[in-house]
Image (cartoon, rainbow, N blue to C red):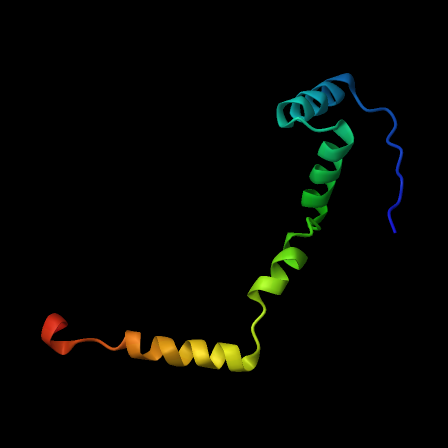
Length: 80
């Protein structure tokens, strides 16, 4: 569930910079502030989004390591 927050006493120069950032990205100040807050507290959601693509089972990892094994051999004639 989302929460609503009110931020008071934002200095004019900070508000101006936030508005400029928002305008340059073509998004609302609210969206810009949410992005900044998420990145600062380490909750961008990126890890959860990527998890479904980079989560391997033990079998997947073992198979991948096995496939790499043949590529890790040094050809003595070339490097000897």
